[in-house]
Image 1 (tube, rainbow, N blue to C red):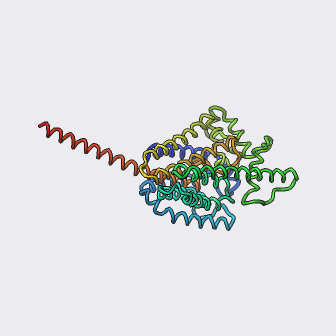
Image 2: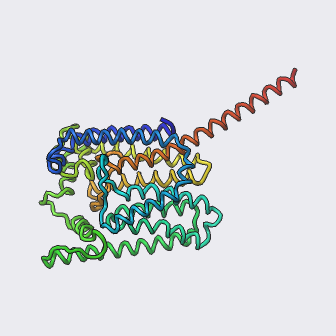
Image 3: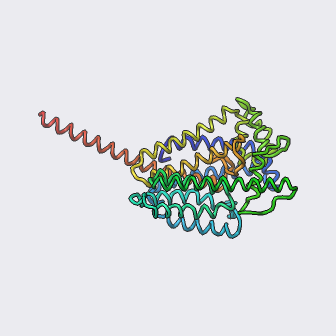
Amino acid sequence: MRGDRGIWAMFILLSVISLVGVYTSIGLYAYSNFSSKTPTALFLRHLIIVCATYVAMIVISHINYRTFSRFALLAYWVTLVLLGVMFVLRKRWLHVPLIGQFQPSEVAKIVLIIFVARLLSLKKDQLNELGTFIQLLFVIALPVALVLPGNFSMAALIFLVCFLMMLLGGVNRKYWWRVMLVGLLLVGVYLTTTYKRYEKSINTGQAAVEYGIGREPTWGHRLYAWVNPQPDELTQENMARMAIARGGLVGAGVGNTVHARLMTQAHNDFIYAIIIEETGLLGGLVVFIIYSVLYFRCVKLTWRCKGRFGALTVTGIGTVIYLQAILNMCVAVGVLPVTGQTLPFVSFGGTAYLLMGCGLGVIQSIANDVNAKEREQQQAVAAAAATDKTANNESNN
């Protein structure tokens, strides 16, 4: 396992927590969605995905990370084609034999970060120019626009991380802040309008119909349910909060969950609530600390990187993992409305788990290169010191 040992340790801890959490919470999902499959069969599928992620990370960590920069443009165009197909078909997933559901937006999340890091590295002397800013903005906005109709939260997450990379990469701050403020204003107005439309459909007694873009009625429902909670309804959100309340400080014990038996998404979107039910607030805090340590190791790695491409890639991938984890945890405890974002390396495995692991493999490839260069530098310093010592001895003799 090459690369940063701390990152490897945090990933291993998260994967162990994932195996235990999925095993104790997947029962209802298995029986309600797969009449021919048992919870054990689905758990074994998850185990295979986790093992495959380990293999992918190890393989990618042995590849020179500059290779990803060379193929970034090709990967970007391939991703655009995939997103375009999904946009036309009005689907979020493709079914791939032996793999299952494949979500191109998960590919876009990693590919776009690498491609933006490449552009920021190549155009380091032109970052103050308006033309460069517009080009970078267009590169980010195009795939985000294709993801948006099917997955608002994913599109917002991808755009935010890549836009932060632009700021950290050195683009003109004047342009950056103006676009950020305008973007926040537009998102705020849009979400408010979506909420009002759904609220109107509820008040008039009419079912929400398809309007606006993509899955807007679903977004309106989630916002409405968050602003106007109904404690008496057995919704996923309410059961997640009851699970957290039952967990208390130390939890009910691993495997003693009650609410996972009633939740269809206990193994996926709301697995953090089940972790707290079984291990208490202390267990939930441990999970948060693991993600924080993982992100800190990524930030520390960026300080050690000599090249801009490597530093920006680590920053982007590390940030998207950390922000997605925070987003999922906030949804589980009721701070944010439901977004549909999974808990990285903990939720039930699929292509999202595997692709996020590939992103972590890229980080380990960069860490491996940094470690090699630091060893070479230390050896050079040691050799120079030995030469100086020999020369001093000869002069003394």
